[in-house]
Image 1 (cartoon, rainbow, N blue to C red):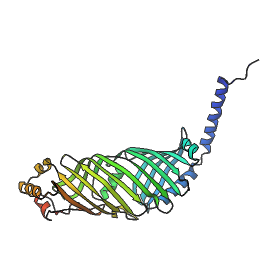
Image 2: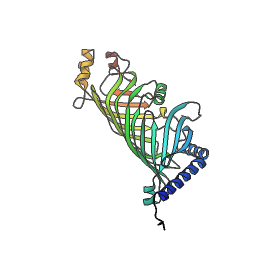
Image 3: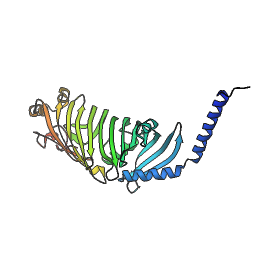
Length: 317
């Protein structure tokens, strides 16, 4: 008599059953309904944009994959950015601990990517989320198009970590905190500043904090390059409909290295700048105005100082 022990035949049957169940789930997956619901939620959480999802499907082992997520202006006429893909996977380990909905997410966009987790708050008032971004390219086509509308170009690789909370009243960024760093970057200037037509930096770091109101706090800002070092902090008063109209107000101090002073064509201007440096060789500044075209004011420098360096007025942008 053969013993009824689980062997190769039994394991094969289990695998076959699992494969059939996965195939049935795949065929019965309501992609149209999921797509419509996801678009509705995105438009609700970030109503300043119009969101369209290209396709939704299942991928192994248990992921829901959203592809070609198109972010447009509110009227839907102008496409701004395209997210290549966003995958969500149920976080079963977190479910066992908290008995609350939780998912792991993975993102591919703008030449880089990111990953993290999101969970329903215990009081079910909204979501909590966290994650990391890596290798986002500032000169990717989507960002390049937005910056071109501001009369600027930029390059560099952006990375960072963040956490936040979403609720029905304040949207996706009811609370938000992130630490971000951009390396090997450049930002063009609409007008020359201290003789520079663009700012080239080795690293640019800042902490961003937001809590329910429309004020984004910029803290511990620091930029370093071969020519200079800067420290800055301040706020961005967020415009409810158009980010380019948000009001920037930063203040900081600029340390000019000897390489910068040596690069100035006018020895008279270099000498004048050296004598007006304050606080141990640092130049104080304020950066104010719309984020798309802020103006910079240097303490102790006359309005015509930039013209002595071959630039325009001293309200460079």
